[in-house]
Image 1: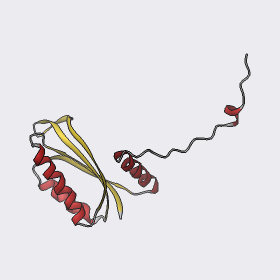
Image 2: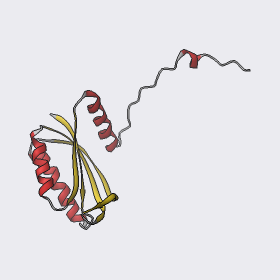
Image 3: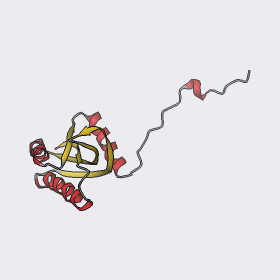
Image 4: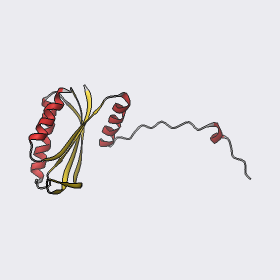
Length: 132
């Protein structure tokens, strides 16, 4: 299983119920094709950096998931045929460093505190400073 993040932007003309339906549809595409959703991040309605298909705003939604690479083709196909999607992106996290970054993003989305290692102070910093 590979680590992925997908973000899509829905048209701002959708009502709340339609937005929820579209989000659930894409979650089902992932789970029905063997994917495992770790967490989702609902970013809500935001201004777009530039106008897309005469829209100045869009509804942003992010899904962090693990899946086989074959699922991505199906997910992107569904994005392309859905007229309510303004833009989408799928990002794959391959290296160990990228996967650690992915886990950090998942923890942030789940509002878990990040475990940070305290950097060791250099000997110069530990020595008491002499008054001038």
